Length: 150
Image (cartoon, rainbow, N blue to C red; front, side, top):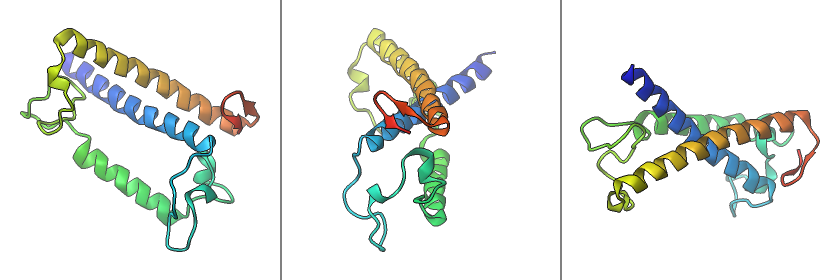
């Protein structure tokens, strides 16, 4: 039925968006690009922590308190920001503008909007496969052409 399809599409779009950010973050940090400055008051720099799974579990992993803060922040976003608010003018499933942010979306014609939504959906699907592949190869070890030593 339509309600079930809309729910599955909503989840697919949200997972795709997260996967796009995860894939890009993984590639960027493995390329040696980090935020400047320190991550805590003890003077640890962002580059002093591992990449990928090593940031969670390893000799130079983020402390448990830091991981907990990240999870709490993601939970806050999930519960209060990344939601479809009814009756706020959302045009489609996964439209998180909620009558607030536009960024010029309303200036596009319907054909362009449909094309951009399809592009986002396909890029999200590719990113989900990409981040899954990076995670598997990281656990297997070895070297990848662009990413390098895992």
